[in-house]
Amino acid sequence: MASEMEGTPKETEGYQIKVAPLAYVKVLLASLQYSAKEGDTNPSEKITGIFTGSRVGKELKIANFYYLRNLGDKDFDIANFPEILGQMEKLQLQLQKRKDPEECEIIGWVASINATDLTPAPIHLKTQYFLQAEVAENMVGALFAPALLEESHGLAFFHLRGDYRYVTEFSPVVTSEYMLATIGDSESIFDLLIEVNERFHYKDRKLLLPPLGGM
Amino acid sequence: MVKAIITGNSYMKILSHVLRFWGTSLPPKDRQASYGLLVGRYENDQILIHDVEPIMHNPADDLLFEDSFMQTYSDVNGVKAQVESQDRVIGWYRTVLSGGLKFSARDIRNQVKFQSLDPNASALLFDPAALEGSLGFSIFRLHGTRFFSAMSEFGKVPWEVKDFEDADIDSIVRFFRDVTKAFKSGKHFIEEFQEGDIPAAEEEIK
Image 1: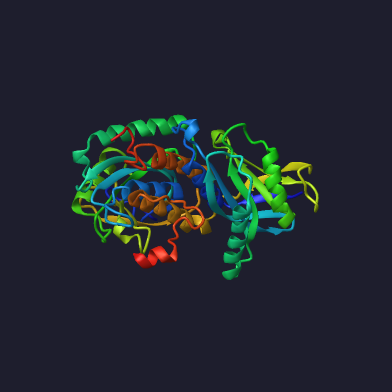
Image 2: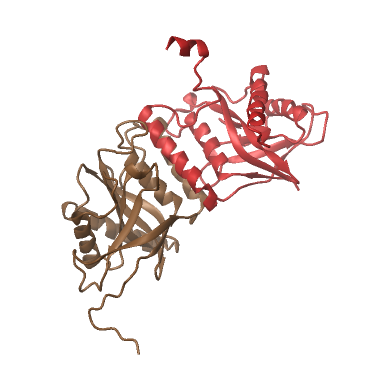
């Protein structure tokens, strides 16, 4: 008879993650708008934001991305940006009100890194531990490396294994497979393009995708 | 019944060309009309718009197509033939600056030129003011099969913008990467026909 002892890790493998093009191109816009020059894939400023979507068991569908903060030259450490927790809470309430089954909850966070290695650094693990332990056990973290764009989409997803009572920042890291897939409607991409065009041509041209709640 | 099917990428290109010269925050007197060509093919009763070629812009939206505009028709077809594509110019588009999606007398005169060359050609009018709540365009064609004139009757062609498929993802990503590149370089991310070309003589001087 199969049994499970207290404290036995519940999760032994990663999620299967589908990322909508809308969410991915918003990450691209948020990050690459800080490139120093045309075609530069090593922007000096890093960003972080939230992936939203839906989940059924191990299958996560990321429908959208909300750009939250420009991190400057720092890596994402939630301890330095406690206001992000409030933004997450607000976003979660908005999603609940909207009742869109494709985008009904926060799936996780993503931060850009200035490296070609997508292995989470200790600071990312600390952030992930905090969010899994304090906000939602099933939240995933993601890193986006613009420097890898010539060869891949430059994304990697991870979370910490274990029951939330036992997860620590030293818990084993589980990575997840992902693919870009056409979930969501085409019109959301067109709406984004309309917004971007307006900012590109007629606003102050400072940003293509400003962070939620302004600078 | 004839129906036009437009790829999502073609729609994004038209949208970007139109919005390059028309913004909600731009005073109406500064808005300009974009003109371009529809590229694709016909299959059974379907008009398949696979691509568009942005050609030019004009302060007013009542441009009468002259030889120079019609020359681009041949030029674009020449380029398509060179790369052995089965696609050809199958119509044109323009921005509506005011008055809504009405096929004007000037549009009919322009359309006569197109349908005299290709009886199946169509015209797409794009009204950015109608973007809230719709995709902002209608497609028109003169009735009949030959001998088109300014007196020809015309009608709307039903259309559908094809949903993105997984095979389109790379082109969507490329499109938005080009946007970020243009943002940094100060260039436009949608350029008009031969806009970026440098005449040979100038290039030699450089």
